[in-house]
Length: 174
Image 1 (cartoon, rainbow, N blue to C red):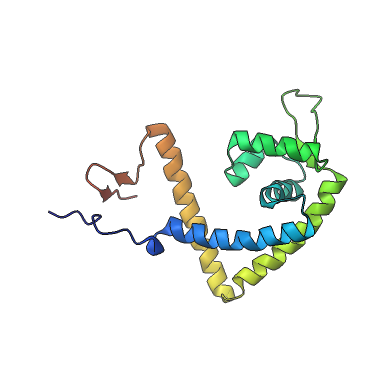
Image 2: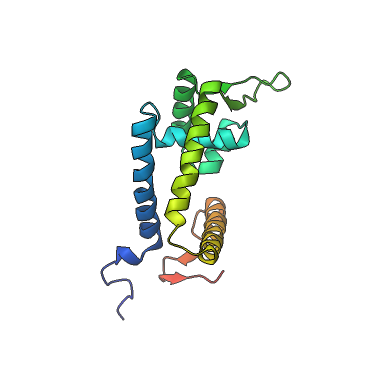
């Protein structure tokens, strides 16, 4: 019996490939903006500033969870942003283990500019969709993210993907 997955893989029809491609394309617009307006700030820096600007205060762990960043990379990036004077690390007098992060005045000013630019780029990216399509699109993305989160949580505890039986090449029912 021929396995249905023996045919060549059509990456154009793979969800991860499509999401990566559109994300990469949209990132090009962001990178162009940062290189022109804030040459000392890149897309990753902007993501940290956007999280802190929106939350007003967050821990490094909060930032890692919000964007699914690697902890070691996040730690290095946060240290860099602190050294650049864009982020301030506070000390909580009631809990020495807690060191909340906030934006400095300089970081807030950059946040204000990049958040406005992000709003405009977001509107431009979604302009080809009707308001109803935008709603459905985001509902679908939220549903896919929730499913992926559940699978990942289960996989981390069970050490296997709960949605796929790799021994029989079948998808398990949710």
